[in-house]
Length: 156
Image (cartoon, rainbow, N blue to C red):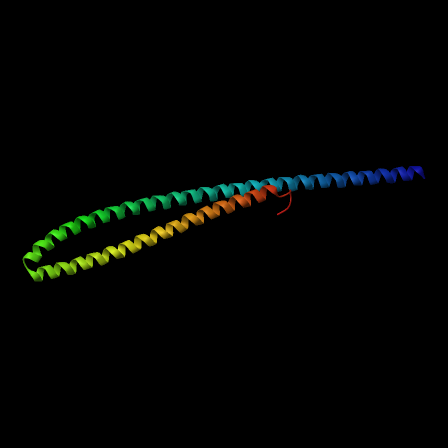
């Protein structure tokens, strides 16, 4: 009877050792899977951060180029206006029809300048909004990464 009990206990112990080994292997796999998920998410986060940084740099370069172009256009407009004023003064003293035509051209020029200014202002506003979006997304990525780091193994 004691041999049967000993044999049964040994079989139970062997079964428990097998279950323990299975659980250890399962826990090791979960740990490895979690580590892989964290690594993949970290790589994705780094790639997203790099992409955001490139986009920010591109937007900054675009804004700088547009600012330079605007300054150039303003200088050209100022030069054109000075030339126009000088010619207007000459025309006013000379031919009234030529002066009226010149005034119409100046009105057209001023309308075009206003349209360009409006387009420039709109682009600046869009670029500002993009920068805000990038800053928000960067912050949100950091929050998600922190949340990911605080997750226990095996939990989504």
